[in-house]
Length: 276
Image (cartoon, rainbow, N blue to C red):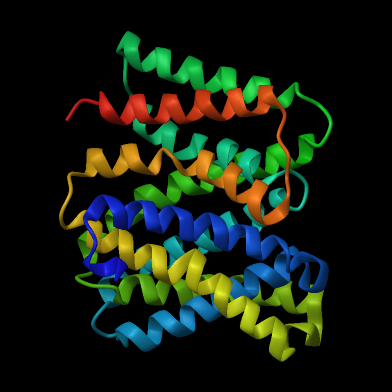
């Protein structure tokens, strides 16, 4: 079983799960739209997480402000990311979104080496923006917005972890995010969200994009240093590009692959050589 595998394998499995889940989610857009797909993912993930952790509001009352903020950021991040995914290929969307975590890693640094990583990442984004064809400017901006939310998500994760002891805080935050996005999904997709086939597909997306990777990452982080975890997570854009190619048939041009490699290298370098 994956849960008994080495922690590095668990992290890689989580990355693959997230990106294949995103590719499957994109296939739902024609039926439920982007907001409807986000609603399915977050609401069903919240149901599963609440069933797993059985969170108590009373036990987490001191963490409620952080839980609400975390849930709002999670909901907005997914709305922006799926809207971007509707306009640009998966690999490009994840690459641009990944600038959020990279910015957090480089924030406040004055070392020339970190400036080099930032320049490398910026070069990758400029290259993506100038490849034309299937790259929408609106899509890139939405992916950047998702990246900004991802940066906030990382900072709030630390606060949430310090105020809660298990997965109950995450479960309650998932409820907040589900309630936030549900009106948009219902307005856009209506009763299509209740079709048995759509619910089953949405459950698959929720499990692959949220429940499984979060569980694997949490387990892996108990066994490996955060720096190693960060380097492995830097593979996300490359795995997303491969998932987009294999699942969605999204062909990327050579300059776009070079841009993805630039961002992956910048993220891995910034994480690997970061100060303690």
